[in-house]
Image (cartoon, rainbow, N blue to C red; front, side, top):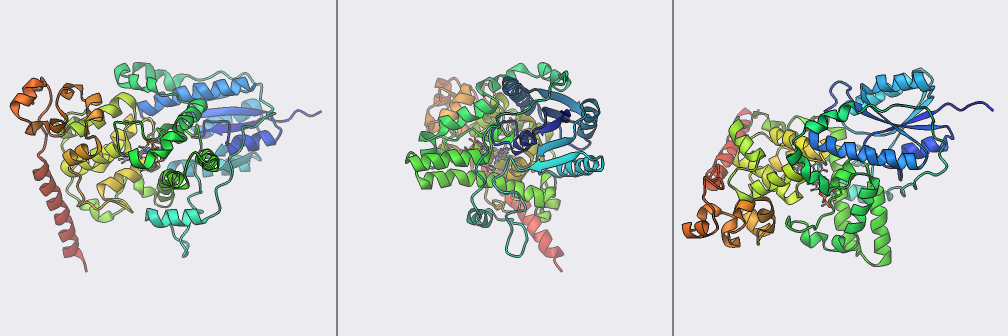
Length: 486
Ligand SMILES: Cc1cc2nc3c(=O)[nH]c(=O)nc-3n(C[C@H](O)[C@H](O)[C@H](O)COP(=O)(O)OP(=O)(O)OC[C@H]3O[C@@H](n4cnc5c(N)ncnc54)[C@H](O)[C@@H]3O)c2cc1C
């Protein structure tokens, strides 16, 4: 009998065995399968931030263990993806490469070039959708154009056929037995990371089993309370699935299927299910934008903002990054990010608005910091949301809608549960004083052991002043535009 050539499954943001179309297709080929992960150094690929790298390290360990259990192996390499793949082809005689798609412009260009090169050598190259409910090109306007407004996008997406049912974990896979040493190089730097800053990651469980557990803990009770509780950062009301989804430890089709089963079982209502699945729609929508308007990553989608008078103020930017703005809700969020690699969505909106409007600092600085610090840092979702909150995006919140951090804080964290957790130096303040400690009577502050400017900063900018300054900047932009209009 002739020996079959092996095939590669190139794992990327699809670190799971179930509902992994590339793996299923490779398994169905009947050829020996070799799992590969590459920490890609292709020019212009955006390097992961330390928090995401930490997550990845653990997620790969989990995937490797799952593969070992099935008799397979995961080769982990760093380098330029096409060189790494070429080297493996030469060493092992691989005759096909399978992967699931990515949608950022650099990955698309890399994959297209690689596919052409592999095919030119007579090697198969097959790609699939593992990470979205709908491919970005599948949801189109009647005139064939792409969507820029979420509500219309989602209406169109919902009117299409239901997404395919998720695939089961493949069984009877023929695994490749080549002895391939792993390259730990990419993760060596992790040991030098600030261990305190990354200690909060211990609360997470990266990997396919962790993702499933996260979903199981969310269904059905927390999903039923999602609409009412999702804006309360002090309670575990949202799913916390974002890093699992980003790394593809679970796919959106699997989530939708589990929710549908809960609806059929009567433990979740149709309305609650739709409210949550709509959030997955935002995730798809951001990928739709990224695919059709890749400039979203670095340029204002509303180009009139190109001449916006952003301030260059590194000291203030640092105060924001490290949670020293003097606004408790903002500082709580930035500290949660530093210590856990995650931040509640409502708080992401508040700190994003504060940076771009109160401090008039360019959204790209915020995007870059989030990229570094978030375990769910995701090009489509990060840039899309930053442009939304800054008012520069396609379907953006209008720039003149400026959150008042103290009001947001009082509305969404009335008892200060969230603030007390992350800003413990304010813990003894009564709720009434917690949102704006600078307005509290001195005896209240003294009683709580708070000395403004010493134990906790005074506000780095006054709200009314900041609001007027932001509106003036916006007006100067619009009047300049009118002046330049033909
Ligand atoms: C300034 C800013 C930056 C952000 N950066 C990222 C990022 O880098 N990566 C990221 O995954 N999300 C990002 N988000 C979106 C959102 O904050 C997170 O997805 C959400 O907080 C994750 O928590 P969860 O899993 O508990 O969400 P849930 O509320 O339980 O929602 C379920 C899932 O739906 C998706 N989702 C929910 N809200 C959004 C949204 N607004 N946009 C896109 N997808 C959404 C996520 O995949 C999420 O896991 C950002 C939001 C803002 C305002």
